[in-house]
Image (spheres, one colour):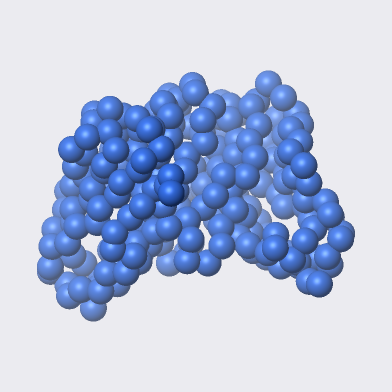
Length: 115
Length: 112
C-alpha cells in the first residue's frame, strides 16, 4: 500500500527516558513534516525536511531532534521526556514545498504517553 | 495567538441535509486553503483545497467557498451522509516552506 507509515502507533514511557518515532513514506515525495497534536486538539508544525534538508524548525525544545537519512524517512528523537510531551505526533509528506499546491499526506499518528 | 479559527467545536445535521463548516483566518497574505477530514485513530485526510485567486471550488458533494474580504472559508457538504461524521480541520498555507496552520477542528455528526 502507498502510504505514510509511523511506528510505533502507541508509546508509553517514563519521564526522563529517550525515545524515537519513525516515519516512512513510499509516495515518492521529497518533503516530510512532523506535527504535534496536543490535548486541545491543535495540530502544530514542528519540523520539515525537503530532500533531507531542514526547512522548517518551529520553536521546539532542543530535546526534540529530527533526522532524515533519506527522502523517504523522517525520524523524531526525543530526549529526557517530560509530562508535557504527551501528545499525538503526526508525520506527513508532500511533493515540494511552498508554491506547489500539493496537499500533505498524513500518517495515522503516534500516541505518546508519559507516566 | 490563533491565526486560524474554527469557532464551532461541533455540528450535528440530518442525513441528506447540507453541512456547513466555517473557518476564519487573520492574515490576508495566506494564499492557499485546505480542508482535512479526520476519523478517530487515523491521520487527517486531504479533502479539498482552494487557491486565493478563486472564490469557489467544487468536488462532488464537497464545495469550498473563500471570502477574502471577510477572511472566511467554508466547506459545504451536500447531501450529508453518515460516513461524513468526522472531525474537519481547515488549514492555511503560510510562507514558502509548505507550513500549514490548522484550525482546532469541528466535529461533524450526521444522523441517519
